Image: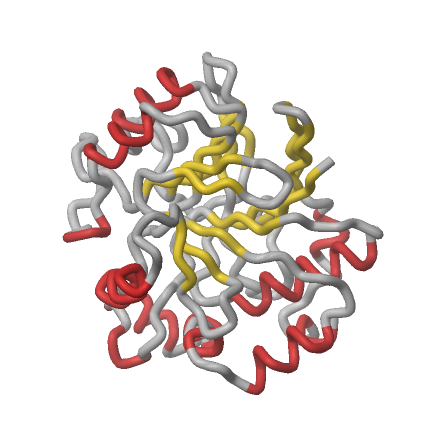
Length: 281
């Protein structure tokens, strides 16, 4: 059986996510085959290119700037990868609306154009799945990705521009492929907030019928969401480490022979992963 941790919005907390994965695997005697993340990784390698919201949050929380610690080699990343105590898998993510899309495009241009994902870090541990493509992960899980947030729903945010906006052609391209899991940043229309979300994603799930779909973006505690089809739909909250790892921000996906199970990590265990001590787990 293959096992994957699925993370909500990280907003720069990439090294904490790896450390949490290592601690969970070590303390539960578990081999992880991959880490998945639903966008708003906070991929801003250059602190001079932060978007307005990230800059505002980074003023009070330096964890928002964590992408710089993996985009180029750093003592912090070297130390984490050397001391985690268990083999760490790669992290695969889709792009949200708070990323440096110019830098993502630059990294994508350096990669094999036939590859469905490309590394964005100096350690080649963080892989961005191309918009509208499917990547097969270790363990055989096939993961499709859609970037950005919808700008057409009645209650949609109108501030997203450029590649932060969900592209219908990417949804169309993905609808013709087979995949087990959909990673998107936005959710299907009405999945969290009435009149918000994406009608295009709703149609994609109805047509492609993957086993699971995971999304983030809405900030509240993660929860299973009602869905009429066979897809099991889950919202992931943000892993912000205000005091400790937040309930509903990360869950365990088990996958074997085309079927799987997903459960959010135990809140009691998450409370042991604290902001002031996570580096020592």
